[in-house]
Image 1: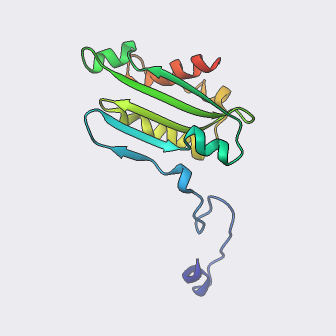
Image 2: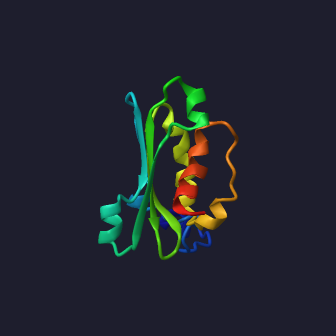
Image 3: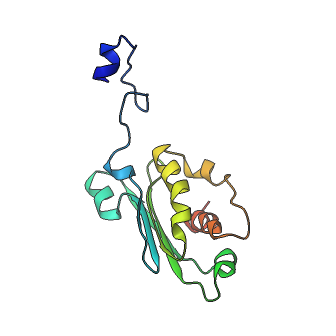
Length: 142
């Protein structure tokens, strides 16, 4: 920002603008490339509550039709951390083979603060691992 101003560029400080760092420590995706993989972004339930959010978690085994196509006997687990007041995703954890592929969608949902009722309309391709998104939203009640 300092260099841009020194060059005479018009600099705004709005969130998500060119010169502002808007992602925070809660919106940084992390993947541990182990077997099984662990992919995580956002708040844990405990941290979300500490920061004043009214939290609900939704968890599921990932043994769905799409996961079974990935590998025979596929095993995995998924968890959403949801802000009940605003119905947005605050955090997500996926554990299983190739779950890092699910993390970008979670990153977009968290950074964009996409309301879950709207996210419900982002239908994943079937049958794929991403089917877990619909199953988690259904478990939530959408």
